[in-house]
Image (cartoon, rainbow, N blue to C red; front, side, top):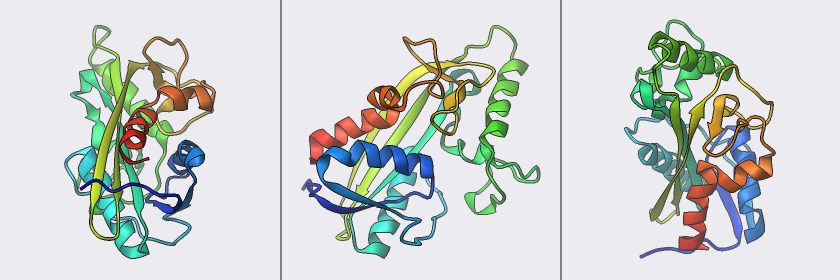
Length: 215
């Protein structure tokens, strides 16, 4: 049976400040009081799932279990058509700059800081290696999982299509935003006003589905 999300405290099961900021803004009109996993000093689980929804669910479930509050987790990534939809669920791991770590390795083996400039350069270099005829089509995926302390979960997935640009442009957003041009536009998410991005992003698409179902 579907649960409803009521006004009050909700854990955002993320240590990514950019994601937490976007989710706070999306939840603002609904009387929700977001508190991040970092603020509660909750650990980050190993992301051992094989899909975006798997990883979102395990993050939300752990946060709900540890906090005793409903918890919302996001797992999202960039999928580049010509790269076989990579980096996909490994999008954050492509930003790990430790040269001794395989970005597709077991999540427990990933160490070191993350540098999305490094990750964007890797996307560009791999596309360049495929030649000028390689498609630059790409899409962002966002999976949201909302879990309650009683074990109930709900899942929602959103998507936005676009193309890869080079060099990176814009200081807004986070992650791969400076190289992603959404379909129908000529500027990147990194150049876009945050309110405009929120209206069309993969995260906003998933949130629309969550709002219809739970709010």
